[in-house]
Length: 92
Image 1 (cartoon, rainbow, N blue to C red):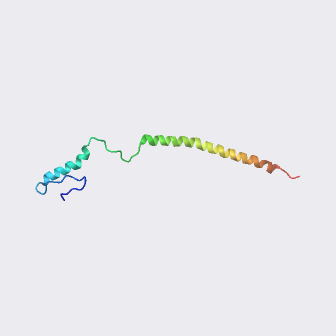
Image 2: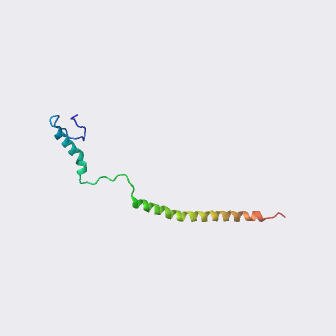
Image 3: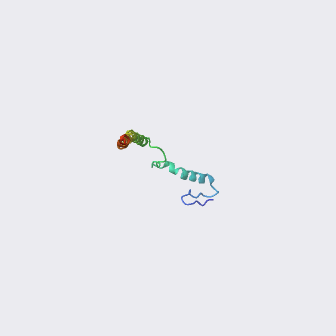
């Protein structure tokens, strides 16, 4: 039990001084909390980036929907224009 693994807590003095061992282990466990370096960025949402991405999608939809409707109308008009002479011809 006194043999620490790699990166484990420091080995205690043995069963003679359990309070000192507990203090060393506590100091080792809490050392990470006392570090001056900020903690690494964890998973989370960057609100500013999410708002920007949402606005970009909204602008794209506001442009794409009317453009798609205009393209469909132009295709329909061209198709009817091509079929109109065939529909109006009367055999003589």
